[in-house]
Image (tube, rainbow, N blue to C red; front, side, top):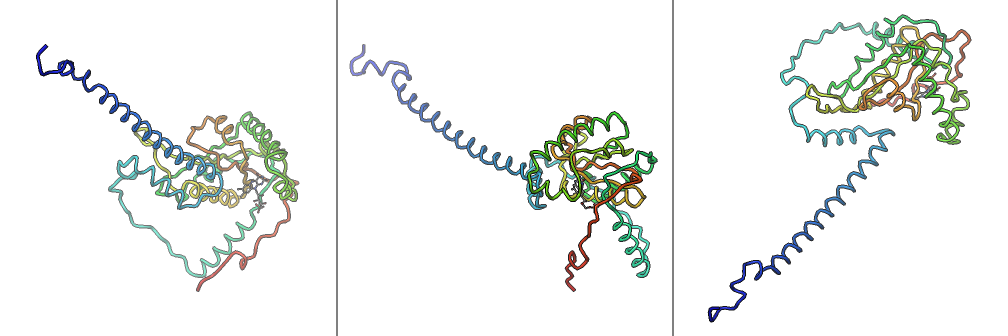
Length: 306
Ligand SMILES: Cc1cc2nc3c(=O)[nH]c(=O)nc-3n(C[C@H](O)[C@H](O)[C@H](O)COP(=O)(O)O)c2cc1C
């Protein structure tokens, strides 16, 4: 041993400063643990928010909220526009009607729209498939957010499939009427004489199941955002219903509660598709009746600012 030097000075670095190093590691690990804890907590809070948000989505969603959600997703995939960047713009072909023609046409169209009723009794008489295809083509002309066309229309004429659809719907509707809908709702439906029996699902020659695509698929397999999908599908379905009426057939607009996933699976539709409406389509049964409903008058629905 050399004089003037303590034994510890000759020990390796870790023996001498080990306790400092240990203390630094412990403090470092603790700090990072607490920081991680804080991040997780924040994440949980925001995902709880989005869970609540998606629960609310089954209710009416304000367009701005939907846009905000989509904007967030956009940040994740900024690969340029879905439509071609150099998309050609062509001359709009337009044949302007006279004022008189417009007045006649608008009145004629109102008469057609006003004659539409929700039918609950259908004839099983066949309907030409071409008519149904044209009706769906018409629905497909609807405007959509950024031209994303977020819809799929499944047309079912197969008897066995119709039977299975009816089974699913009646099973759920019985629970809906007895348990889920509550007194107020079932009381409101009483005058319409609806219940969980849905004979029309097997009697109508065609069933149209309109699906909303929550998102689409890009050629590279990535997710394609569908903007304003609820509104877009609602407009497409409005055109579909009006086209059914225009060509002389009838339908029943229905949103079978709690049946969406089972019907989607039955038809083998992908997970991004959510059932929006189920519409039987055909001729009315010979003895069909409809509730004698009155519609609001123009001055009840129109507010003019001149
Ligand atoms: C979103 C929506 C869901 C509906 N769901 C049902 C339904 O499940 N069963 C039914 O018999 N009618 C249903 N209807 C039809 C309404 O009861 C009907 O439109 C309303 O009573 C007015 O009658 P009208 O369509 O003959 O004018 C629904 C209508 C809409 C718009």
